[in-house]
Length: 67
Image 1: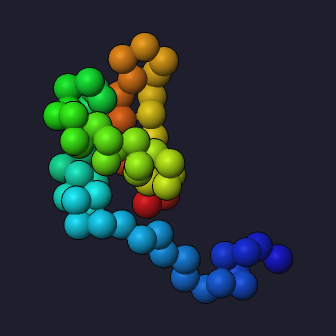
Image 2: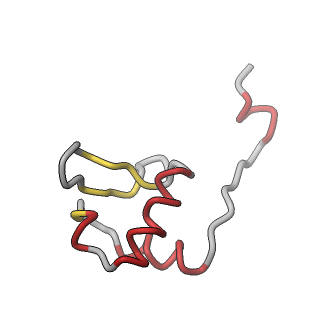
């Protein structure tokens, strides 16, 4: 039995600032092209698995498909 079946719906808390960034990122975007504050918010979303980092040097960020 999967944990999702036990829990029903599983939601991850996001702040208003995080939600705004998620709606802004429709296509892969260079992390370095974002303002410093948005880079920090993006790192928080990566830790929450709501964003994916693609690449090693100068990575792109994209919204996780499962979100």
